Image (tube, rainbow, N blue to C red; front, top):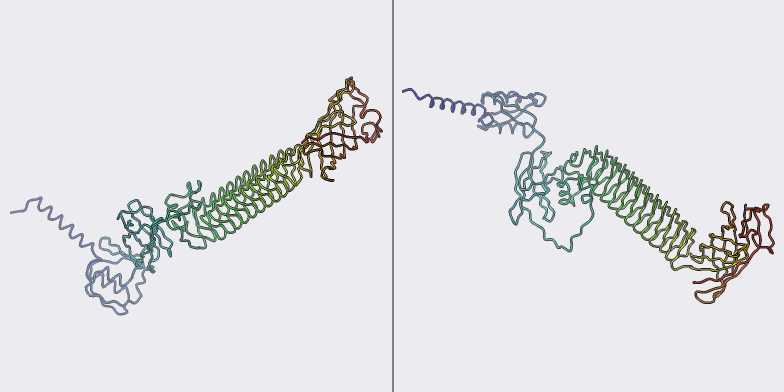
Amino acid sequence: MRPAPRVLFLFCFALLITTTAFAQDHLNKLVTISANKKPLKSVLQSISQQGRFIFSYNSNIINDDSLVTINANRKPVRQVLDDLFGSNISYKEKDKYIILQRAESFWYVSGYIYDELTNEGLGYVSVYEKQQLVASMTNDKGYFQLKMKDRSQPAVISVSKAWYSDTAIVIKPGQNQAIAVKIKPKEVLLDSVVITPNVEKNWLGKFFVSSKQRMQSLNIDQFFVDKPYQASVIPGVSTQGKMSGQINNKFSFNLLGGYTAGVNGFELAGLFNIVKKDVHYAQVAGAFNIAGGNLDGAQVSGLYNQMLGSVDGVQVAGLSNIVMKGVAGVQVSGVYSHSSINTEGVQIGGLASFTKDTMDGLQIAGVASVAGKNASGTQIAGLGNISGGEMDGVQIAGLFNYAKKLDGFQFAFVNIADTSTGYSVGFLNLVWTGYHKLSLSTNEVLHFNAAFKAGNKNLYSILFGGLNLDADSKAYSFGYGLGTEGRISNRFTLNPELTSQYLYLGDWEHLNLLNKFTLNLNFRISKDVSIYAGPSINIYYSNQGNTAKEGYMHTVPAKGYAVAEIYNTLLTGWFGWNAGINIF
C-alpha cells in the first residue's frame, strides 16, 4: 500500500530539517588530530576533511604558515579550535563553512542584584570594575549588564548602593558570565548623617546630569581615579562612559558639556562644565561652570560660574559668579558677584557685589556693594554701600553709605553709622550714637539762624537756614557746612566751622553766596544745653550790584563793618561774629 500523501510530505520535511541541522552543526563534530610542529594550514585541512566542511578566514588575521603542536582524540571541533587559537579567534557557521575571525575585545558580565533581607531585585545599584573603569546600573528588577574590555586579566566586580554595604566579586576573564549577588542594608545612625552640598543638587546639575548619574554618584561617592584626559559630547556620552563622574582629569574637552569628578589641569567646553570636586588651574565654558569643591586658578564663562567650595584665584563671568565659601583673589561679573563667607581681594559686579561675612580688599558695584560683617579696604557703588560690622577703610557711593561702626571714611549724599570714630562727608551725616545738635544763632548778617548738626566730634555736617524779618531789609538764606569739635576741658570746647549759604534778596536771577569760617568757643551748661560765640571770616560773592529789591536787604553786611573789596565789588570780605545756643 502506498503511504498517504500527507504522511509522505511530513516524513520528507522532517528528514530535510534533520539533515540541514546536522549539516550546519560543524563545530560539534568529533575529530582526531595529532600534529607536532606542523604548519597550521595542514592541521586545518585535516580537521575540515574529517568534518566535511570548509574553513574560511583572512590570512592577514590568521598566519597559516605558523607551526603548531596539538593532540586531540575524538574532541569537538570547537574545543580543538579553542586549543589552537585561545580566545583570540571567534567561530561562525554558515552553510558548509566555518568562518574564522578576530574575536571581539569585549565580553559581558550580567545578572541580578538582590536585597539580602527581602530577596527582591534592587534598582539603581551601581555595578562597576575599578581597573577597566566600566560601569552599569540595575533596572527596577535588579538586572544589569556590564561591558568588559580586557579579556586577559581577572575582573573584580564592585557592587555599591547608598545605605547598603559594598560588595566585590572576582570574575574569571574572557567569556560572558551571569551572576546573582545579594547585598545587605547598612545600619545607619540618623544623627550621624550629614547632608553636604553637591553639584547634583544644584538646579543646573539636576537639569543636565541624569538621575542615573546622580544616583551613581551617591552610590560610589568614595571611589575616584586620576586619568590624563577625557572628551565628552554631553554628560554620559564620554570616552570614560558612565564612570566619568568618578574620574579626575588633567585635560578635559567637552564639545557641548561634561560631567567629571575633578580637573587638575585644563577643562574647556562649548557650553558647560560640571565638576563634582576641585578645579585646579583653569576651566573655561561658553555658558557656565559648576564645581562642588574648591577652585585654585581661573574660572571663565560666558554667563555663570558657581563654586560650592572656595576660590583662590580668578572668576570671570558675563552674568554672575557665586562662591559658597570664601574668595581669595578676584571676582568679576557683568551683573552679580557673591561670596557666602569672606572676600580677600577684589569683588566687582555690574549691579551688585555681596560678601556675607568679612570683606578685605576692594568691592565695586554699579548699584550696591554689601559686606555682611566687617569691611577693611574700599567699597564703591553707584547707589549705596553697606557694612554690617566695622568699616575700617573707605566707602564711596552716589546716594548712601552705611556702617555699623565707622572707623574710616565715608563719602555720599547721605552717610549713616551706628557709631563712628571716623569721618563722614556728605549732605547728611547721621551717627545714631554720635553728635546731634539743634543750633539757634545770630550774626552780623542775619538776625535768626537755625541749624541741624550731625555726625561725630571728628567731623559733623551742618544743614541750616536763616532770615531777617525787618520790613525794609528782609533776607532769607539756606546752606551747608562742616564742623569739628576740639575738647578744651569738661565744659569748654572749640568748634571751627566752615559754611556756605545762598542769600535770597528778592531776586532768584542773581547769585548771592556767603561763605563763612567761624571759630566758636562753646560752653556746656548742662548735658543737653550749651552756649557759644566766636569771630568769623566772611567771603561774599554777589552779582546783584546796585539792583535793589524793595523791602529786601541790599547792603551786606549792614553799615558799620569794614568791608574790603577782594575782586571789584563782586567779591568782598570782612570780619564778623557769631553767637548762639545748642540744644541736645
